[in-house]
Image (cartoon, rainbow, N blue to C red; front, side):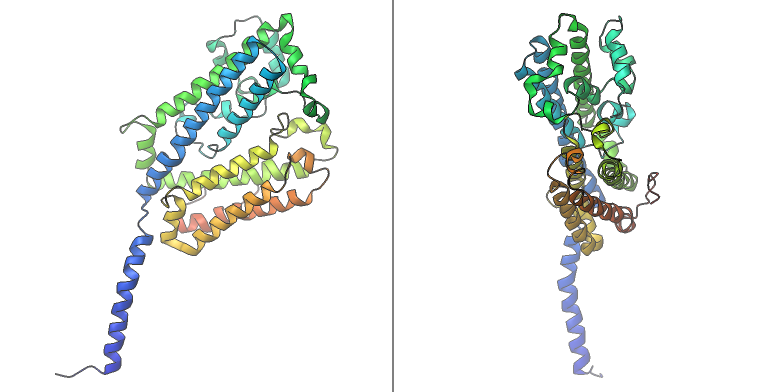
Length: 368
């Protein structure tokens, strides 16, 4: 029997040892399956986010009740604080624009910011009884969380922000003829409370007909949707939040009503909450989220994406104050934050979906 040369036997042994070493590592890297990723996304991200939102909305409803029963500086402050907390909670799950929130057409109640003050005034002057049925019939421009912002906060001027005791809002709710205004704001808060509770109920309903099981059973189709949601949300932060304010012509003080969250002073907080929401979607929990799944396909890309999320959030946080206040005085940090957010947006529209086998299908606002 012919014997193999020593060099060949050593080569075979070396290759065998490499296989023994590499195989366990590969199996470990690929342990986050698509099914695990989707189930983790539901149980650790979506459900807790909606539960948090429902809790914050319920607290808002209670605070609005207390305020309308006894309009004081303190009760108004608490109602405003509850509004901010609820608004930011909604931002952390805004990336999800499918499932029950879309099926029930609830998006506008939580995310449509283009309310019309003139239409709200018409509601206040109307004679129809304000109840749940009446609120249901109203359009998106006169109800939802941003109608509450309009009714709870003054026009945003630094003098009013710094001296909340001189609130014109408090005067409006303290007048003898303010009964309808009080009924209106309570009904709006209660409407949001019911809707937030319904979303939690549908996401926690067991069985094949529950939103959670439908989400998980969707497999690649669900993965396509959430990656599209992620990319679209990043585009919105970059273009509709940050760059929008940069492009406004001075003086910005005449255009505050065009800046989402400016009335409540939350334009920056809102952008940060949106970014935290998509970062949470990407990271998942216990290493079983989108990042963990991506590591099994392209570990360097997973790490690069993680670092870019951290860089973007640090840059946006570094702006330090509401966008409408910073841009007129110091554009540099806002411009830097925009460029970093834009880079992450591009990554999530190109390399990330390509690796995950996803096609970006939403209509981009900037041609991407």
